[in-house]
Image (cartoon, rainbow, N blue to C red; front, side, top):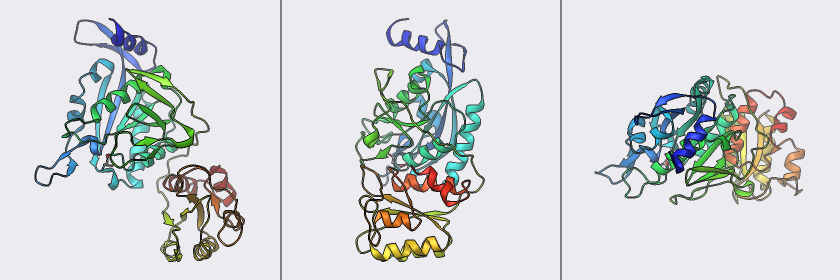
Length: 353
Ligand code: ASP
C-alpha cells in the first residue's frame, strides 16, 4: 500500500466513524462512512436529445457509479432526496434537507455528509444548513457546471474531492462548505460568480478555507464565528426587493401589504436607497416589518456612512438593520431564521454583524 492509497489508509484510521470493511482485495481496512444526499442540479443532468437542453436525469446510484474511486475511500450510502434543478429550490426544501442531514449526522458511525446540488442556489442552500445543523461534522455541498453528457464533465472529480474532504482530518470545524474545482468555501461567504465557468465559486475578501490538491486537503483558513439556530417548523415570508435607479418603492410596499414578515433591500453601494424607496422602508418599519439593508456590491460592507434621505446612516437611525458583508440572498436566509427566534429588533440586529 503506497502513495495515495497509503495516505487514505492513514487518514481513515484516525477519523471518527470508521469501521472495518473489506475492500474486495483480501485486505481489511477501516473506511469512514459517508452519506451522499442527492438533490439534483447539473451534476445529475443530461442533455435532452430532442431539445439539446440539460434536464434532470441521473439517480444518486448512477452518479456515484461514474466515480469508482469512491469505494476505495469510504463506505458510501446514497440517499436520493430529490432530483430538481436548484432554481426550483424553496425554503421548505431547505428545511426538510436540513432535518434529514441532521438525522444522518447524529448516527455516531457516520463521518460526514456530501450533498449534491445545483450551483444556482447552492450558496443559499448550503448557508441554510450551515445555520441550522447542530452536529459538528463535515458537510460538503458539491455540484457541477458541465452536465453528465458533456465530453468533459466536472461532476465526477468534484464528487471525489468532496468525499476526500469529508474523510480528511485536516477539514474539521469548517461548518458547511461549498467545494468545487478544488476550492473549499465557507457556506457563509461563498458566492456564484460565473454562469458557465467551472471556477464559479469564490469567497470574496474572506478567501477560501482550503484547497484539495492530488487527494489531500490543504487548510488555509479557520471558520470564525458560526451562528446556529434551531430549525423551526414554519419559516416566515421574507422578500428581497431591489433599490435600482428610479425605483418608486411600490414593490416594497406591495411586499408589506401582502404579508411579508421581513424585507431585505438590495441597496446600492455601502447601503443607500433613493427617496421613494426610503419612504417605503419607513412604511414597512411603521407596520412592524423587519427591514434589512444589504448591498448589490461584491466587496465590502454595508455601513452607516451616508446621511440624507435614504443614506445608510439615516436608514439605520430609522430602524433598518444593516447586513454587514452578507449579500441579499444570504441576508434573507439569516433574517428568516432570526425572525423565527429572535423576538425583538435588538435581538435581530445582533445577528447581522
Ligand atoms: N441549473 C443548474 C442548477 O440546478 C446549474 C448547475 O447546477 O450548475 O442550479
